[in-house]
Length: 313
Ligand SMILES: [Zn+2]
Image 1: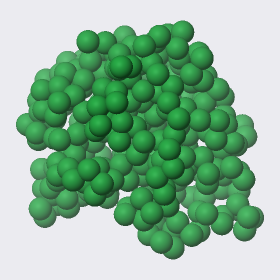
Image 2: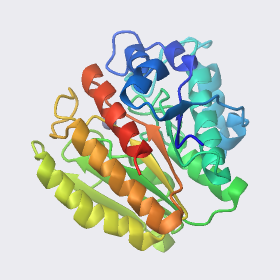
Image 3: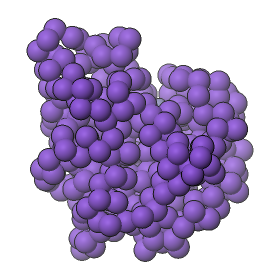
């Protein structure tokens, strides 16, 4: 049995954003052949159709889905205020990212493999139910949480987001939901500006959102110390039945959009921590989804380190 499934699909190459940091080359760098050289234990698996549009409607408004599905043919070349570019293949790529997440979760739930990483574009954690934002079309981690609850009957799902930017879309979706714990570590101040530490959810969701902010220039050792002292215990205290990782790699020290100081070794260490937390709380069940990471060399080496961590005992 292969331990770590790897989902990568050529549709990610059809989301053509042109000269942009969130570019096709990101997917090229994460081709399974390249990643297998760094993490020989991964098993590249096919993505199975799950009716992505129906899954998306559990999180996103029907009007928004309709808008995105027809945006390119209606002449739009960007959504949002212009930083979320689209091409003819973008919609299909985004649907495939959702199908990949659902396929990955099915395999983890059935025990076909222990963990999975979805190296899909476009990213997802800024997308709102009614609006694209920050290179993101659909909120794949949120859609996956709802899928796990509906299809697999799970109750409590945790979403851990270590992208350097705050996962404002995911936070928005689960703001009043006590059953989905959203935990974000991010640089502040930085785009999109939300995610202050006093943002902890509302109503029944009070306490099910946790934001840990880091000043620009924070060193890796300080970041990792807080990760282990605060993030991991909070994750365990929630007692999740499944952990979804919104894995951006733009907290890397060479990333052009962030100013944190992480290295691939840091990502590997955090990966092992999350894996251990999943083992303690939910039989090891976790799926990791690619978010940001915009220095191509840093992205490739960091994802490689992440995969090595996922494959480790
Ligand atoms: Zn990011």
